[in-house]
Length: 87
Image (cartoon, rainbow, N blue to C red; front, side, top):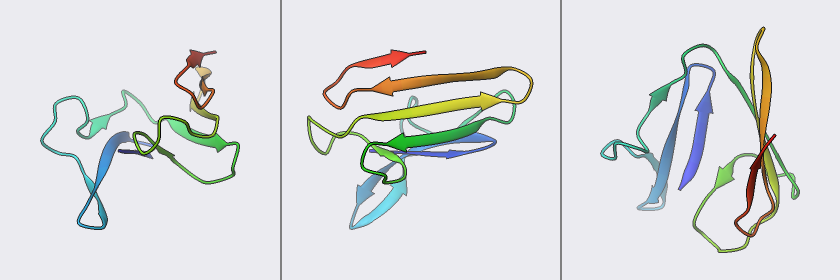
């Protein structure tokens, strides 16, 4: 499962038939709108863009930064072995 983001919202996609396809039939993973424009930045230890979940039980550490104009930002830190911390 891969996280896909845009300033107006986010969704998750699954690899099916060799292609990434949006998940539309799941209440929790379908497209969702932010309440206002949100900038999302992903920083991975290996430099790759984006975040994928579920391929391996261990992955490289990453940080997802969510920011809104006039409201500041929050970061989600993942250590790569299942621990997540919001800062």
